Length: 153
Image (cartoon, rainbow, N blue to C red; front, top):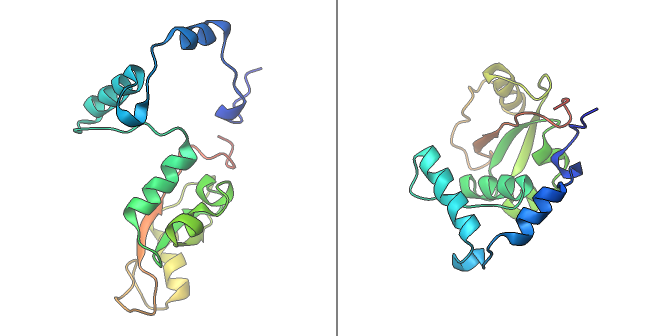
């Protein structure tokens, strides 16, 4: 049986360990790790960007993305079972100061109607974008997870 619960339960093979032991290394922060440099260059090329950055975990990547696209007091829309909400130790609140409005999707999948229902629930008679009002959080980001841990992978 292949266990697909999470990428955190996998173990490297002997060949993988040997390759890691033989790989040239350097300090990636100073741009001195040839493997990381090659990976970042290749990813940037694939996605058509000037540069890319390697992040050591999905959790780190999620938190950087939220912080990049929001300001404290903003709102993000996410599925009620999303990893970013359920398994990241309140990072969105602690690191970005945002509130999470939860959507009841189907195994993590939701659409515009579900998003509108969540926003309208708080502020009647609005469309998906709330009016500009300093009393209301601004919906700045929709976070989607593909595939969802709690939705069965």
